Length: 392
Image 1 (cartoon, one colour):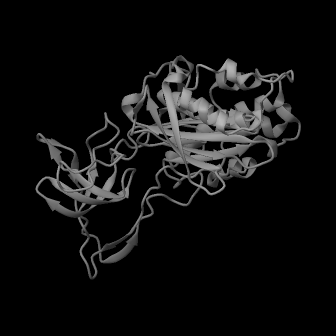
Image 2: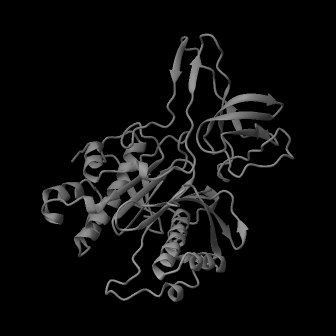
Image 3: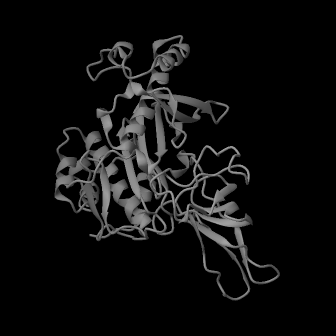
């Protein structure tokens, strides 16, 4: 069975605009020939084991370092070169928009110069990140959110629409896992999350169906694209992560760094209606400073629970990106937040591990739209923090 990505986009009303990217890809007009010569372009080839290469704000090696590294595989435009020091402007990839980097260290190449093109004198625009939301030309980084309340297929799980989408999944174990749920909303969440993993994979591979895509799971049960893989020079560590709870299924993918995403529903009661004593049940999962933050956001328990849910969502995104899940002691990770919107519905955050700042991690958090309150967190971190392993 084949399908076109527009089918999923229409049915699920994928809202890519829900998430604000942690760092936007840059794209700039490029002039080839004509009245001006094209500046030299370089590609970052080092730093794969550290999440990229170090960027400093000045030419001197003693100048202050930028908080974020320049990702492996990033392309930059040369602004100035002094010996082995290069001042650049970001063209594609992630990292600081400009700064100084070392071309090589101790004889090891960190950047390599791209061969110049002898094409005709024309003005070209290179859209490094397309405005396309889904499907071919949508790039390697995706941020999708699907509200399952808006999708009510006729016949529910036994209807033609649901069964058509279910059978787009080749892996029998995954299809059975969807139907193993008792309640229809749970089946919808399970199906949509699996479809989003495959749609993100197909989009990153410029494919219009799932026929050639093979999804496996890590030992920690995190789904990953086993084959085929995107070009290593463009997306050396392409990975995708999904989460679902309440009304929402969310998905995030990255080409260079590890990604984790989590959505938390603000429901302060158990399924039987009894209130959750979250102060006691989760007391070891937040640090003292985080609990102080929660209590400051009263005056009622519902307001406190919303603040607690933001921390919980961030911690889940963090351990999902790493791959160790609930095995990680959540109380070791402390999150600090800065509002990005006046109405305080969007935050940027960083994490401190056992009191030490981890500058290579970045988090963006959104309060989701709709009557049922949810918070979603996307986390991005360095490859060196992966603790999961591929499994069968």
